[in-house]
Length: 265
Image 1: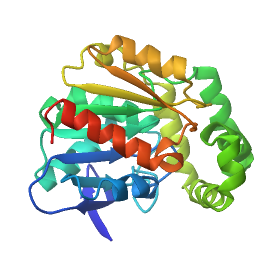
Image 2: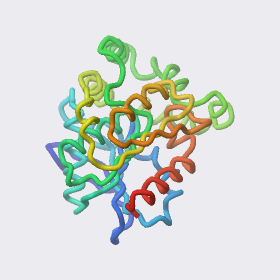
Image 3: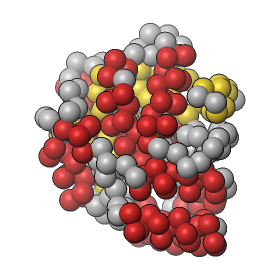
Image 4: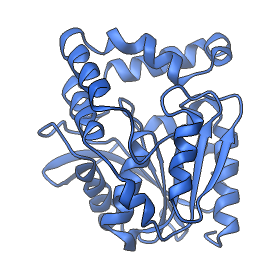
């Protein structure tokens, strides 16, 4: 395990491949830690990338810090980890809130970004009322109270039936997320609007979306792609919100195709 203190929080992170290679930075969804990328990273093991994974503040083994947060707080944490690792011109791959963080990073520190892969995300996610309702529910009743809703949005019915152990493991991961970290990031998503950041993206971008995504449906992700200059939109079949868990091989194939088509590997 590796830890680093940046911006007054200690973050849990992992670097893969210490030698030269195009940096590929993964950013996680709400309530999860960097283990959600294990299958994707395994599929990419021979492609020559240098990986950076981390648990967001308030998630996994990282400090909670002082919630509520902003998306920019999370983006500055990623930037600090990349600076410490000597990473520049990286492909940033974020899912859900991780995609918002990727957009924020591209606006705050364009020197760090050579490409964006935005998975099951949007420049603005949900409504203030919906996030206020989720915050109140989790504060009063805990994360277990919203897991049934999350499960249906994150995984297809077929996956829930055939890969029950993986769904249970993901549930355990989410339920063990510190409530303060989860709620703090809910505030960040509620208050975030990265429409202008999306319009001003100046690097190659790819938007991926599970065809059955119940959190950021295809029309929402496609709408984001349409305002990002030159952004390609690809729907991943037989997947809901968590394409990195449900379809890691297909996700990896799209990452490689994107990187090769833009001369990034």
